[in-house]
Amino acid sequence: MFRCKYCKSVDKFELMFAPSYNGNRNFSQHYNNRNQIEISVDGYAFVPSLDFMNEHAVCKYCGQTYTWEYEFENERRKRKWEKTEDKITN
Image 1 (tube, one colour):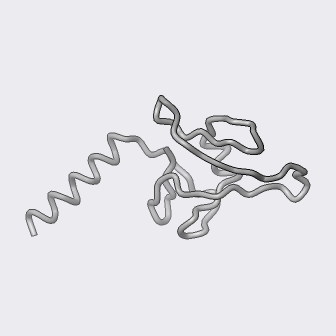
Image 2 (spheres, rainbow, N blue to C red):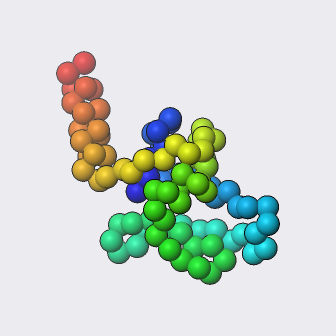
């Protein structure tokens, strides 16, 4: 899972294609059985690395590039708990 450093959205991205790319640019994503994002581009499926994301992905929400970091499930749960705790105490 990947998180945008600017707006904190998780796994919400589009791919930037090189102008010289000759394929159909059919892009899809899903989570595999290991809870990893798997990207498919014109029939070629792969699990992206952080380097790939920072070179080719644009955040759908804020439009930033080169801003991705890893998002780990335990961090997401922790932030969700902190938000819930804040609501309870306020």
